[in-house]
Length: 127
Image (cartoon, rainbow, N blue to C red; front, side):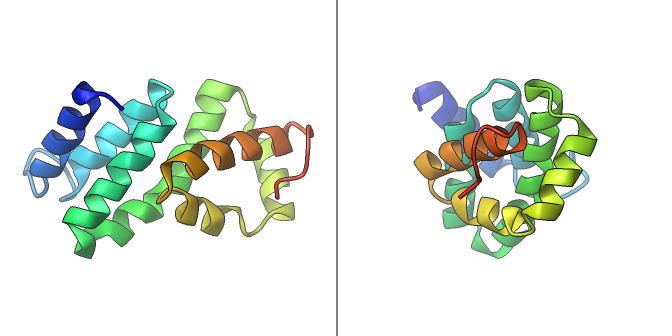
């Protein structure tokens, strides 16, 4: 992560509670979406970790949004069809829990997202 991403993360955290968003952590949630759009999975994770460290009371809310954001990323940017994901998720009920744990480890998070995609495509088992 470079200085530009650090500034973006700091700005989003500083905007916690801003009336500009529907939820107090809206700025960070928006930044997380931007990072996924930019294929910056490590920065996505680092933003969550920084938020957890600085605003721990709201961290569970943000972490709970991670699976939904990753599913959208897989659909929109990786071409995973919704029905493919749903079939896979039935066979891998722990995926959401594992993803929430992984997001707190930036290097691990990148690998877990890649493993999920590969597993859905049938390239290899998830874990």
